[in-house]
Length: 450
Ligand SMILES: Cc1cc2nc3c(=O)[nH]c(=O)nc-3n(C[C@H](O)[C@H](O)[C@H](O)COP(=O)(O)OP(=O)(O)OC[C@H]3O[C@@H](n4cnc5c(N)ncnc54)[C@H](O)[C@@H]3O)c2cc1C
Image (cartoon, rainbow, N blue to C red):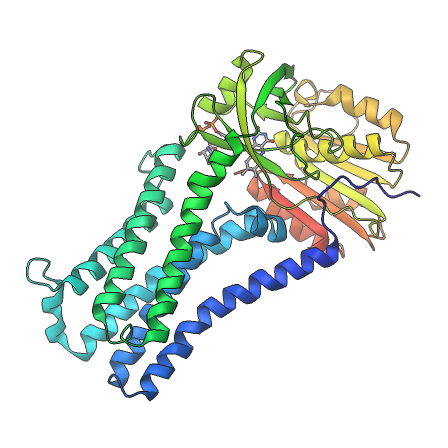
């Protein structure tokens, strides 16, 4: 058995572990630091214990808020180390925690001295209280618009724009509140730490939303071909314009920017479906679901497109991996196809099992190419699972569930890796089943397109 010719920038497992340790350590440090600083100030005898406790909670909220700007799914480093889904999940959970901490912070102060209720009167309140109120209202708006986006009928683009503006407002107001409260920021250590924290968050916001998108425009691509695929999808093949292209690893995704907009919100994530051996000709296969994904089919050849990436985890296929299990549903086939194309082109002869769920036989995106790959790769097994099979269908029926996985997953999964991609519910369920079948969590790359 030969391992794949590893495409550039794949990253070794050791490097990945180190990255994870560094990011997790930094995260913990930023969270713990305010508490250490508070105890430092308390020793200096600045405040009463209840107020100190409440301020510690408020400080914790500010640190966590600043961290959310960094842990937002926009940093290629963190999504590569942990995967997009875990990063976004942490972002959501930590966002809720910030809100709880802020409410707790206010509640403690009011319980300690109900006369502080007067600070909630925006006409008479001092600047520190007004800034605090603005930050709290902004936080509620952030949470409300994120949780109820669909009920509020906010398009994804409008929600993203609002999210960005509200984040900047909350961060600025929270900073002003801390500075005006003064009791802690009078201490130079605290003052400079808070400033560094907020400036880092503001810098991260600027980098991910403006500088990085701008950098992507310096490496444009042209549409080379637009090919219709089965299952209401199209493959958009791009060509690097006077640069070396996108050095990605199978399993990663990039954000495509609509023509004519550099900073606009019209930016959509798609997994690379092409071989990692062809960085100058990256391809994306897009299923028409809404405005942007439907417009892709009509892009004229030669149109300039901007690609921000690569982002996200890559499929685990280092030289220690003995075989790969790919589980895909619907358009979730795209990263799996990139794995297969890369393996075929790189002469990788390790066993691969693809379990692929589609609605009907006619809908199977890349059906013919998979047949062709099966002929070229003797160690490839493809299992189609159809939810609406034809009458004479002798293969797997229904959805990809425990029984299907149980029948086709190799018995000995030691040193096998898995890539699971499709609707969020299927990804969750399959990941759990694979864990129950004995696969390590670290060996599974789970990518939900929801
Ligand atoms: C990591 C990742 C990889 C993906 N890979 C593929 C792929 O290979 N092929 C494919 O067809 N689809 C893929 N998707 C899904 C694709 O991004 C959405 O279908 C597309 O952005 C929908 O945009 P729209 O304007 O056509 O539809 P809309 O009607 O605007 O959106 C439909 C839904 O898609 C989601 N969405 C819309 N815009 C974005 C955005 N900018 N970022 C994240 N989610 C958004 C929202 O949940 C929205 O409710 C991927 C998604 C993610 C997160």
